Image (cartoon, helix red, strand yellow):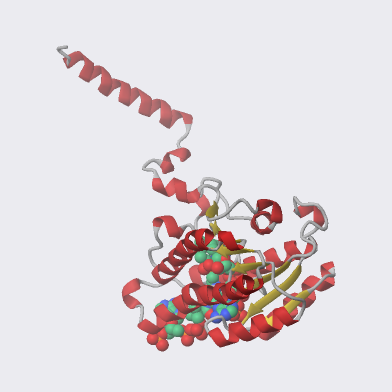
Length: 299
Ligand code: HXC
Ligand code: NAP
C-alpha cells in the first residue's frame, strides 16, 4: 500500500496501540499495514511464529514504525494472558483490539465431527471472546478507553450453509459486539464489527474455494458489483472504525460486500442481468395480463 491508498492524513493513528489477531496474513495484515502507515504501533498474533515475523519485517521494511509479532494460540486463555502481559509491559495499555483471527472450511454439516466444530468455534467464538475479555479486564482496571473491532461475515444476518460452525461463531461475536457496546460504553470501551463479503486471501481461498487460485473466488456474477472486495477498501474502513473520531459509533456491524447480502434477500436480484429487450418483453406480457383482467371487471 502507498499513502495514496489511504483516505486518512499521515499520522492520523499516531499514539494508537493496536493488537490484530491473525494479523500476519490476509485481511489482518492489510489492516495492520494501513494502521502502521498512519502511525499506530501494531501487535500481530497467530500460531505460526515464522509467518508473523516475516510479515512484521516486511511491513516495517516498507513503512518503518513498529509491528511486534507475538506467537499466540488464542484458543488458550493462558497464552492470551501471557501475550497481553507482554504487550502491556512493552509500552502500556492497548488502545484497540481487532478480532480478526479465524478458522473456516466448507463442509456438509452432516460430515462434521465434534472436533471439526470445535476446530472453528474454539478459534472464532471462544478465542475472540477470551482475547476481548483479557484486554477488557485490563482496560476496566486501569480506567482506559479502547476500541474493539471484530471481523465477522454477512452470514451473521442470513446464515452460512456449508460453513455452519463459522456462521454460528461469527453470529455469537455479533451479539458480543451488541452486548458489550452497551455494557462497557460507560467504561469508555466501544465495540463495532465489519462484515466483509469475499476478499481474495490465500487462507480463505484454500478453505472455501479449494483448488482455485486467489483471483477466482467463486462466481462473482452473484455480487451486485460483479467483483470481490479490494483489501484497501477494507483497510480504510477498519481505520475509520478504530479512529478516535468514530468514538460515537458503537454497537454497529457494517457490511462491506458490494451489496451482496441485500441482493440475496430479495426475490428478483438476478433480474439485474436482464437487457432492454427482456424488460420490454416482460412489460408487454404483464400489460397483456392486466388488459385481460381489466376486460373481465364488472365494477
Ligand atoms: C470436514 C474437517 C475439514 C474439512 C478439518 N476438519 N478440515 N472436517 N471438512 N474440510 C476436521 C478434522 O478432520 C478434525 O476432526 C478437526 O476438523 C480438526 O482438524 P485439524 O486439522 O486438526 O485442525 P487445526 O489444525 O486445529 O486447524 C484448524 C482449521 C484450519 C480451522 C481446521 O483450517 C485452520 O487452521 N484455519 C486457519 C485459517 C483459516 O481457516 N482461514 C480462513 C478464514 S476465511 P477429526 O474429528 O477428524 O479429528 C473466512 C471467510 C469467511 O473465514 C467469509 C467468506 C465470504
Ligand atoms: P487468513 O489469512 O487465513 O487469516 C486467518 C488468520 O487467523 C491467520 O493469520 C491465522 O494465523 C490466524 N489464526 C487462526 N487460528 C488462530 C489461533 N488459534 N490463534 C491465533 N491466530 C489464529 O484469512 P482471511 O481471509 O484474511 O480472514 C481474516 C478474517 O476475515 C477472518 O475473521 C475471516 O473469517 C474474515 N473474513 C474473510 C473473508 C474473505 O473473503 N477473505 C470474508 C469475510 C470474513 P495462524 O494460522 O498462523 O494461526
